[in-house]
Image 1: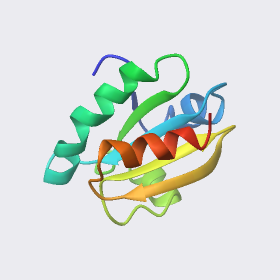
Image 2: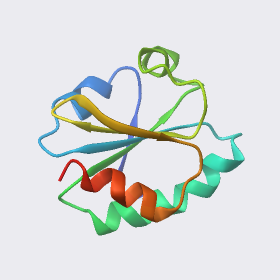
Image 3: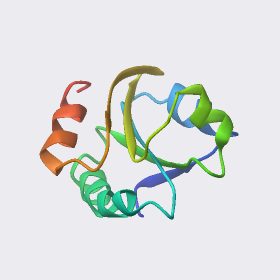
Image 4: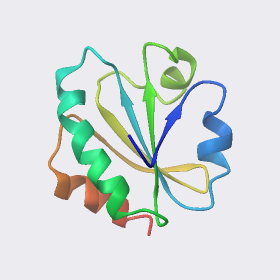
Length: 107
């Protein structure tokens, strides 16, 4: 997971809210099969967008405060933040192209 920040309830605001570049956050859990399908796509995108977009993963089971704050009810949920604000989100295992379209909205 090189290039992907492990987010939690304690570091979320610093890593996402204070980021100078857009941040794509993957809300996931280790028991979630669709989450595991999306993971390699996120890793590839983290390489492709290095320096232009930050990527983070937040385990919803271990960090219920942040997951609740953003109303996460289904996983995987990908939320794109810019200047600490939600730009857009997508729920479910979606193709790489859909995630790229999401990222491009903030660049």
